[in-house]
Length: 164
Image 1 (cartoon, rainbow, N blue to C red):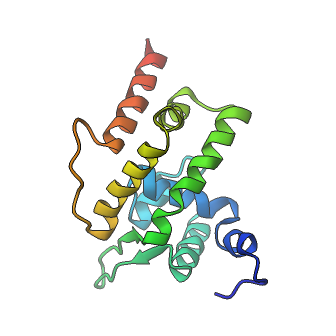
Image 2: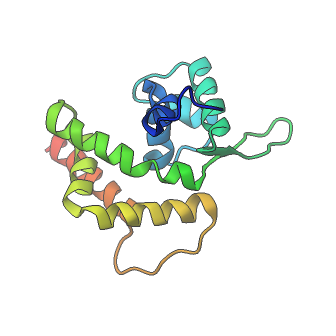
């Protein structure tokens, strides 16, 4: 997939610049949704199946995702490549802008706020955990709960606060 110009911003926007591609990546990264059906039914924004199928093909062609081979009747599993994992800082930056300038639910904002509070080292830890999940890298030792566990705990705490 050749970009229309040699500009690196254009090249990135051609792959990631539509509404759905970043949301699909968000769901793969933060929701650990790796199968078509999970991505379709788990979409908060209600992505249509034809749009999801198109975006998955585009993300695979761009080298951001890989599609596992599936025998007839089996589901194909999608995995992030290193290029896909490297989209996390972009998604993080967009989330920070949204945190500052757009409204949202307390539960969903809680995860972004945790990432902001924890800073760049936390984003690196998330990326390391994604490498374990998607690329089969060996886990790095750490004390206490991992980054994704802390994100889940932040969401659960915000959700509980809404109930109380």
